[in-house]
Length: 371
Image (cartoon, rainbow, N blue to C red):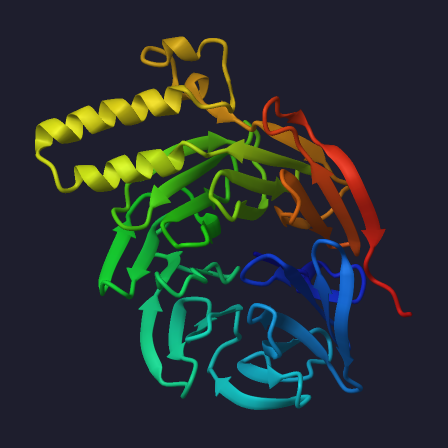
């Protein structure tokens, strides 16, 4: 999960993004890049260039290899080029050239994924061999999610039509399309750590939908709010028991999705059964959804006759941040959330896993400094 700040830059930050396990975050700036440990907050290293800025940075877990794309008013490298950087050697060891500006880069130990405005390219990391390319709907944000698990190679990106999602299951050589994940253009796409669950939001920003990547079935719908919002980040807990979402409304929402794993297992099992079994499983899934700990309307018991709004699930816990962009993830401590903000501030909150409600601020620090 990341935020590209080039179009609304207020300080030296051009880009901020978490690594694959959310243990670190990297910052691209007007004159180089910095890497921090997330929890506890600690600067790991920085590189300063005399002659240009970095617009996109992608870490490969915690190792010395990073992907860099030039950016800012004076780019260090062309925005149409991806540089694979070895920080031990302090030099570029490989590069990929494109005809259009690069919107995002995703890394695994065996893959390099480069996102352009209307296409996604997938390369083998070892020799830069092009393995696949996927046409997408207009994708100026560079939306794309790549599972970090070595046991399940899954990629999700916008499909070829408005609001659709394309899923590639490379290990089983299958492709899935969710034709109408949302009525509006997508604003965020996120996979859980093992690539079995997909979360999406649209530019409207009121609903979050969770899908099975193996079947494309919708497993859960969550409500952020009733007003339109720009979603900044959408991240699963490492055990897929919680989901955190931040937006331009400055409220960070935490949802209980512990029952989704049970629904996923039932849905997967039902694909091998007959229609009667499918109907029984569907009824069981509805019962599990009814037992959710997320907030619901007092009229939810009448959901069969009232509009869908009254059957919505609102967040289980929440907290507010100062104005500005932010990205969030779960911390190392139980029931903690880390927020990294575009103004260079870092927050840590904890929430009650039994009662929910307002989370408690446990830490704050400005992470940008010239010391």
